[in-house]
Length: 429
Image 1 (tube, rainbow, N blue to C red):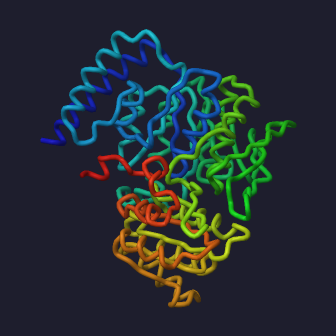
Image 2 (cartoon, rainbow, N blue to C red; image 1 turned 90 degrees about the vertical axis):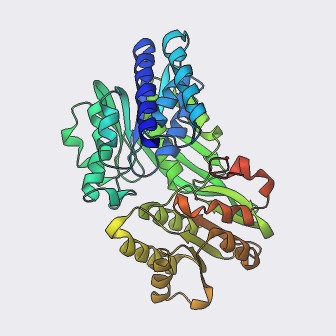
Image 3 (cartoon, rainbow, N blue to C red; image 1 turned 135 degrees about the vertical axis):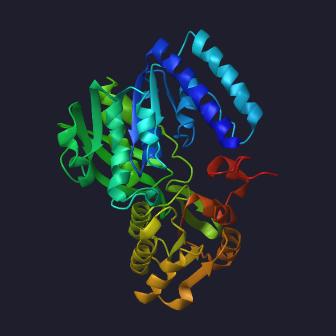
């Protein structure tokens, strides 16, 4: 019954969305990829919002129902059928009677299983397609025949790109560049390592009182170079997201200086390499939104690169939906942890593989701690913390690793503002 109700609601909201798009004809920027979509979506919005009326997905609502909700400007009803019925009625009014509408929609699109992107591409017509990264082992891969099938699904958004549209792509990703021969539309690349239309360079962590406070880098377009400093985050995801955002902004005829000013002023999304003050003058890298092998590896590299910190503590939970790749990928992360962290805490049964591999590659057993639940891990981490520690916390959504962050953050009263999954849908009373 619930599935039938959901299908009916999706059908109604999608039909209403089609009407809205047909009436108002906004420019559509759609983002795909297995890593970095939300950071890129937020960066694009930050780069263009002062120049053109724009709307973006709230949080990571990128599903078959999240995209129509964004187009209609409605809130997620979660499990409340009355909210969904109200949404359908309000959506009809918006579809038929609204006079004003954003000029640009910035839409994050997601893939959980085969056919998701194809279904979206049937009715969504895209002006600018952004592809962030297609890693070797993507998240959700367990629902596909193999990683290549998953990458094909992500990239199939290309079928929704208008003939006169433009593909903005990560020029450092070989899985993406190998597909460019099948793209008939214009292309614009962004990169950090290889030459591209927008090239990020000179990235480094910014410090305040010997603790990381943000990241700075330069975005190069031809002979011009634009400095960007983003406070409250670290890691290369912000660098790549900003490079993609500038490429999109230029396509939308936004001045480069205006775009980079917006990028420097943005607030990083919660749970995505967010820097938070911790207890005992520690620093937390909160990357708790979700976890995939390539994202965990990148987060560990960011932890390793920090200067001035006393100890590096990695708190890692299960990486889910990896199918037959799960055991191997958890072991590979454990090998990296042994070279990166001084202390390791794992949460969940699959993450035991991280601990076992870290031990096998030289990490001392006395600094490895294993837990089943995030609640206990957070409480015991409080006692382990020392002044000047840097703590990376990352896991798949269902591990609820944000509970660990809440236990060790200096301002737990700001959890609703700073952490992911703080609404009633995740925390029913």
